[in-house]
Image 1 (cartoon, rainbow, N blue to C red):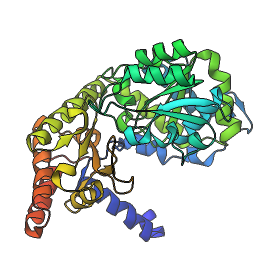
Image 2 (cartoon, rainbow, N blue to C red):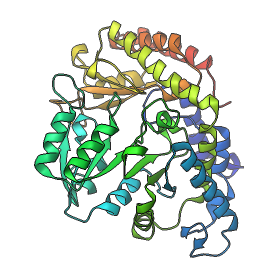
Image 3 (cartoon, one colour):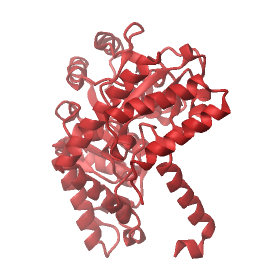
Image 4 (cartoon, rainbow, N blue to C red):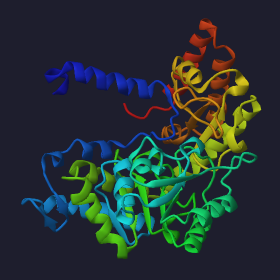
Length: 409
């Protein structure tokens, strides 16, 4: 139908599908959803307006919308072991907006991980609402170890006395000690909020420690390692449910995206299966195998390795910038993103590092042996950056590997 009615859009979609299938998608915030999730996204639920919560809508005709949203809520509660869930946030930034405003007023002080050290824009960056509407205090990693220094975080918290401390990251390759954050919060009388957008799938599978026992509120996207649709949700203690819900609607959002919420429910059910736990374990095994192989080729990894799904690489030793590396690897159908490294001397749009991850490759069925091949292809691209003939061979190697691990037919 689409091919006939709008061939230009159909062609763009088909070309994107071919790009995904014929390249190594290694951006750690991306994944491949199942056909069942895609089916829910493309359903008639997109036609319905449903402002409000299940059982309390501002429009009629929401009987079946309530069924789908309630399934998403109950499955999320079961999956993460939390007391209350709001599945309506459109994406991670609106989820963080609502969560922060549930606990803070404009001008209040909170602490979050510095963007340059691996935090997110919504963790207090001055170019974002979080840094403009609140007094944001940053914390980061140790210069020596490139790991979170909880003693230093405690010192900052004692000096600044924030109302809320946010734990979480977008480019940190190690486990977070949520219990340590809780103890710091208790000492200074702060709320504890965690953003687990990147590691939600690992948390759900028990591969990464859960923040739920130690947090007042937790936000996450529903894609990335959770392998659901583009969207988000907020989990919190029951005592904060009303404040959180009212910040999502009516304060910051209107009608929920019902087709996306149904797709979230599908993804949550998939994440409850034993196969998902093995998938999450394999993500980490693959990341560690890839990290070791890259280090054997002389790449410097921030913090010396990884405990999760992502790897942050300092390209300075290879005489490349992150921007140059991103473009170089894309030319051979390997997709990564440029990224700042801690204490980077370069600017965000042309930083020193790249960020790579294993969720998509793991979804396609690749394992440790394939990670060695991927590392070899990356190294060959870097070592032969000016040799177009060599790049053609690398591109062929990428395509051969991808054809052995199809996903969408």
